[in-house]
Image 1 (cartoon, protein in one colour):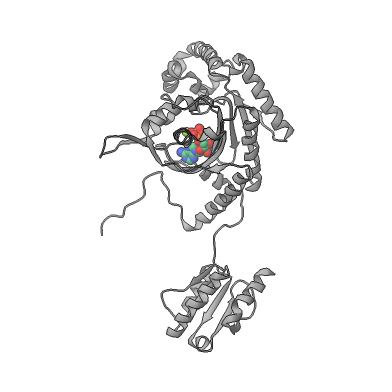
Image 2: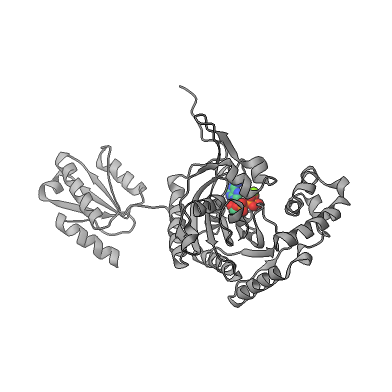
Length: 423
Ligand code: ATP
Ligand code: MG
């Protein structure tokens, strides 16, 4: 036998026993997003490599070492499997001139690809839901995005997540801070790690995000971006805090929050939990007022966030939410040729009436079929032997409660079951 082919490392199958939870999540977010007036945008999974280089930034983890990029063998185009969704969203908005009709509230959902070291909560194909508000400048929209997250955690019954916020100020104020940070870090040049040294001149703010404990110690005393903040950014940030406060959403200010992508300015935020070990950020975002112009659109402000679905789902299953496995209502067992034909009819009419119905396939005696019915998780078995078929009848056997099996005319089955389900 040839060796079995396995999935690519870090890319997971979502098996039927897990996909019920995914579908529950997908249904929940659909209603949640509609409640805030956000509409779905679907973009291709593959984009020109340049799109990500220009938006995410050359000196970032993603562009330096995490992108799945390749040359199209047929026409030599340089392409990349999307590592995140904002760039594609902005590209599509520009390409189709969506801002022409005014600001847009949009969302996307789907797989993203980053070549990282696979571990719990970190995969090479993972999934995000991203929400983007384009064309809005005011802090009210930053607040809306954060407040809608808080609602989602309530809807999903997720507790123990905390909100961290900060502001990166304007591009100009960041430049001033950059110089100050460089001169502070240069004093520690000898003890900086390799990443930090490399980034010192190219992208020193990224060092603030270092997970190396030795770097964090050095950074504890580093100057704050806050001290160089321009007045407008400060006012923007203060209003955001005021709205969050008024709406009862608590937060902490984290001066070291810089986010892994270059396009952010002003507001940045992360929702973090302690329940997932090192991979504790379940949702992250911020304002990116310069990005639309940076990739060739007419300048317009914007703000958004993305959440990691795998991390959120493991939080839901770890906090013990209900078993989301989808089970049929009725499993039909049948034996004999006449019964087989008859069971088709019953199955279709049960489905017409809205019951999830599995029609047994693969033969076997009644005992074996009943085992399958039980294992399916169905609440009832519908039993059809030749005797039932000959008289146009069905026996309904409850599988989950102690109640008698009852035999009835075909025409009564739907009414009988509907009565039970309405109880
Ligand atoms: P991290 O610091 O954990 O690497 P990030 O800053 O790279 O996160 P973003 O680009 O902001 O992450 O993506 C938003 C969210 O997507 C993250 O908060 C996380 O929940 C999720 N996410 C990011 N990378 C992965 C991954 N490789 N596997 C699973 N989820 C991920
Ligand atoms: Mg990352």
